[in-house]
Amino acid sequence: YTLTETTPTGYIPADPITVTVKNGTVTYSDNAFENRDGTLFLVNQPGNGVTVEKTAKVGDTSVNGGTVSVGDMITYTITVKNESGTVQENVTVSDTMFDGTASVEPQSAATWDSTSKTYTISSLAVGDTVTFTYTYLVDTDDSNRTLTNTVTVGYDGKTSTDTTTTTVEPSNPGLSVT
Image 1 (cartoon, rainbow, N blue to C red):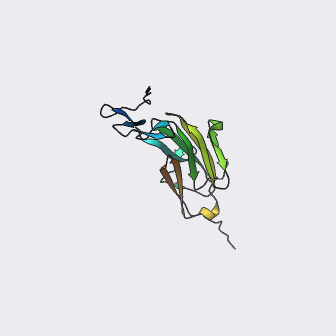
Image 2 (cartoon, rainbow, N blue to C red):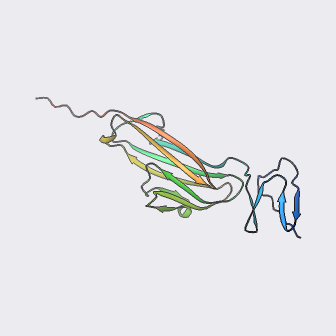
């Protein structure tokens, strides 16, 4: 047998790894890898997995947890980063306010599915970041309520979420004097 191992960047086993080959089956002492159709995959990933952070701003001012007025344009920015130590494939990004018009950086990093209202990042390398930016115009229907906006990222059977909340001030309809 020939065994070649490439340790993923950032992966440091707690103890030395013992590799055992018995009757053609390869096992590792720390259960860090699993055999999937003859290919070994790292399953105990270092780091924080795929993280997500969401901000809400009007101009340069953060409004997450703050207040906005009817007519304000809120800019939401979602940052997805792979801190897992392995390439993540088919990472899904869904947001309660997505409509498919988000600006994505890098541009070709994600595709939009209008049925599920989800962006999919086909491959996210270790340390890479994808950013989604979109705007929401606060209208009179939002007056005197809280806008709760949640983003969910799905990867490798796990999820990460982040939520912004913004309170909309009551609108002041014009007064009429007769």
